Length: 91
View 1 (cartoon, rainbow, N blue to C red):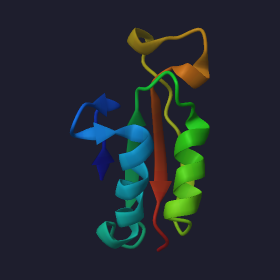
View 2 (tube, rainbow, N blue to C red; view 1 turned 180 degrees about the vertical axis):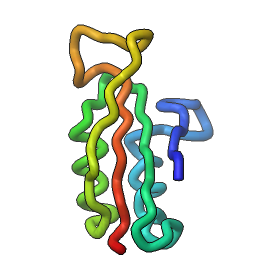
View 3 (cartoon, rainbow, N blue to C red; view 1 turned 90 degrees about the vertical axis):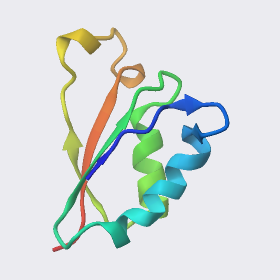
View 4 (cartoon, helix red, strand yellow; view 1 turned 180 degrees about the horizontal axis):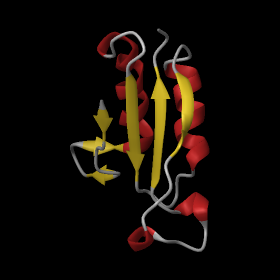
């Protein structure tokens, strides 16, 4: 499953408020052993935002790893760059 909502879209999606709600639903949406690829392009939110929220909202999902960014998304500060992290449901 690919989860790539906009970081901030007034009236529709605010990452800090809505991403945890979305994560809470992942265990019911993923097949056993299924993977979720979560994307976040908000410089003010580091990768810890996704990891911490996932541990709180869907603790059964395991972090597989962060995918490297393509050169077009290169950034001096890795924490502020595009975050694409894969999580897996238990088999």
